[in-house]
Amino acid sequence: MSKSIPPISYLSPAAEADNNENIDIFDRAKSYGVEEFHLKHDAATGLKAVVAIHGPHRGPALGGTRCLTYPTVDHALYDAARLARAMSFKSAFAGLHYSGGKGVLIRPAQIQNADAYFESYGAFIDSLGGRFITAVDVGTSVDDMNIIARRTKHVLSTSVSHGDPSLFTARGLVRGILAAVKNRLNRDDIEGLHIGVQGVGKVGFHLVYLLHQQGAKITISEKNDEVARQCIDNFGATRVGTNKVYGIDCDVLSPCALGGVINDATVHQIKARVICGAANNQLTSDRHGDILHKKKIFYVPDYVVNAGGLIHVALGETKQSQAAITGIYNAVTDIYQRSESTKEPSHRAANRIAEQIISESKPRSVFV
Image (cartoon, rainbow, N blue to C red):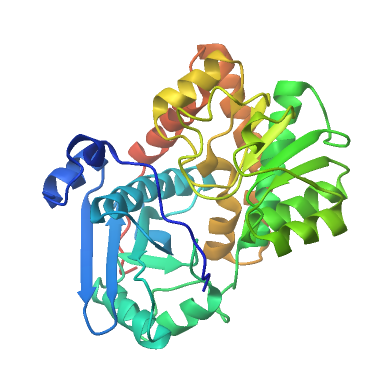
C-alpha cells in the first residue's frame, strides 16, 4: 500500500458552503447524486470506511477502494459519490452490466496492523451482500485486495483474480489519445508530438513507456524523485515542477494523478489542444469543462478513456476485454463528433450518452 499519498485538497460544494462536520447524510446523498452511502467505523483497527453506490441500474456496483487522507468526513463522502457516478458512466460506455460504486478509506495517521485493517474492511464489504464489488485504486494494492479477500468474495484485483489493472488502463488511455489526436489535430500517430504527463504512478508510468514506444516527446511532473529519474533515464522524458506542467506548450496534457486538477488555478494556464488522462474527476466542476470548450481544447472525459482497468478487472484478459479496450478509440471519436455537431462541451456530450445508456438498461439482480 502506498505510504505517501497526499490529502484530497479540493472542496465539495457542501464543504465550501458550511465547512463543518454537521453532516446530514441524506442531504449529502441527494446533493451528491448517489442512492446509497454505507459507513463503517472500527475503533479497534482505525478503519473509517465509506461505500457510495450511484444506483442499481445495471447490476451490482463495481468500483475500486482508495485509501487517502481527507481534511473532513464530508470530503470523503463527496469523493466517494463523484467517483461512484463516474464508475456508472464508465461501465455504461464499456458495455458492462455493473452500476457505479466506490470505496473510500479515510486513512489514519498510521495503520497499526494492515491485516486487521483490511480484513475489517473486507467484512464490511461482505455485509453488503454483493451490492458492492471492489478492486484496487489510489492508495491500495493487490496485496491489500488479497487481505480483503480473506473476508469476502466480493473483491477483484487479487493475485488470483486479474491482478493490478494499471497497464490495461494505460493501454486504453493510449487508444483515447490516438483518437483525440486524430480528431483534433488530424494526426494518425503520436510520433514527435509533445505530451505532458502529470503524475507517473501506477498508470502514468505505464503510459510514459507506451508513449515512448510510439515516438512521443514526453514531459513529466512527478513528486517521487526515483520514479521521475526512471522516466528520464529510460524514456528520455523531461521533468518540470508540479505546478508548471499545466502551462507547458504541448500538444496533449494527460493528468494521471488525483482529481480536481483542472480548476480555477490551472484552467487558464493550459496550452495543450487535447486533455486526455487517467485521473478520475479531473474537472473540479462542469464550468471548468465549459471554459476548456471555449478555449477550443478537446477535453476527453476521464471515465471514457480510463476504462481499460475496469474492463480488465471485470473481464480479465479475454478477446472481449481486448475488443472493449480497443473500442475506446471509437467512443472518443463519437464524443468529439457529437460535441462538434451540437456545439456543446465534450464532457456534457459524454454525460448525455452515458445517461441515455443507463436509462435504457434494465436492473440486473445481484444474485444472478
